[in-house]
Image (cartoon, rainbow, N blue to C red):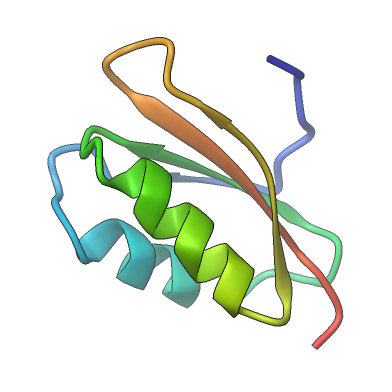
Length: 81
């Protein structure tokens, strides 16, 4: 796993679908272009949910996901709108 310089960490541990995606969208909307958001989740569905959301959203890029522990970590960059 690569180390990313994150602008903010969003902790959605203990929350299930759709909250990790909803809170990720709310948080990423507040960030500057180029900023990286680190999202922590315990919902295994967050792996596919956040990947699907990022693929369908024009102003974000899913950089990396890590599922090596009980906490799933997602790195999402805000791109130009």
